[in-house]
Length: 213
Image 1 (tube, helix red, strand yellow):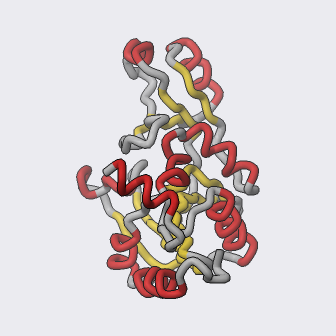
Image 2 (image 1 turned 90 degrees about the horizontal axis):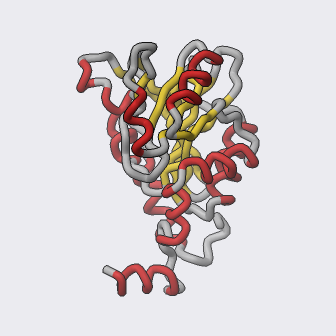
Image 3 (image 1 turned 135 degrees about the vertical axis):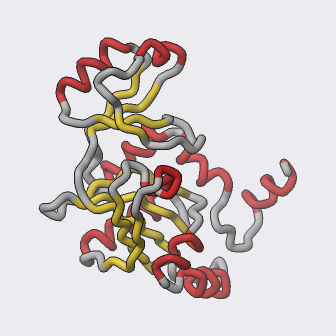
């Protein structure tokens, strides 16, 4: 595996995506800084293992959610008022204000942008079925400014393919929570009927000299 990883870093072939560039997802806080510089709104965020700071943060916001700060997948969960915060001392946790609005997953594939709206009544739509909740996927049209911002963010991270987790407030303001450098786009393609696989094939066909990057 080490030899394959080394080859992926030095080959002149098109690699989607090079391992070193995928490492930005290993630190959610670090990635959030890049997201903010790209022009997206980011939720008010606290990273701490101090229960008292968590309580103070929760008092400042109507609703708060928490998740892992690493690349390890975790379920985004709402913080309840009676939550046992003593376990926070064992490891830093990322707490964020909960943003009301429409979930939109954006896949940037070269210069192509595919947006999928996700309607659900759960905090983390990926696990909606686990909790017996409704979830619906449908193609979504982004305005050109947001689409360009998505392209810019993917390019800033050096990613040929990227999955951006966005949320639009009722007033249209776009928040971005994180960027997945290895997105399972086929899941969204199947449920929303968007031809992302064709875009991947076109990208690979054009190869490393492609003007897309």
